[in-house]
Length: 247
Image (cartoon, rainbow, N blue to C red; front, side, top):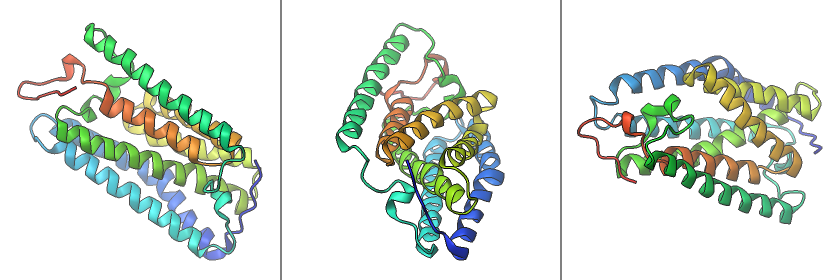
């Protein structure tokens, strides 16, 4: 994969502001937001809806700033930030199909674990954001799709291009730094969350570098996040009296 973006002063400055926010502020804001959700989850019926609504707004604001930075840039092509067609469309289409099938199959396996009363791996770290009602499930799905679209555009698309075009890094070094920034976003789940985000981000980054497009990373991100937030039922121990978990 080869890209050659030219950001210029205005584009570089706008992207640097966004990068600074993602590195220095977003992990701590996310941690405080999730801690607040945990405290209010069982006492405020609409706490999760408000949480996902705010998360969705924040992601679209970040994507809008990323778009503004690109508009201000001197010469950044769509392909420089992964918005072009994949280098091999048929290969990318096959990967996307396999990812969707894989998400459905693994989702059913995890639902079966739940039905058998067994622990569902990984869900304990995001217990507070698991939907219990149809309304919560709908807003969780919207947030999951938004997360997949905006996070891939910002972290994989823009930040890697920034590393290459402004910092003069090799595309793979820029991808590694972008991945480190993305891993920090998992701080709200603790150290296990940072590790999980690092592994998840590494897979998405690999798809991006192999295909030269954000299409496969976005599909991967969306289907896996929807699976975890909206497809798998709440573990029995996380339900509370008065909450109606709908499969």
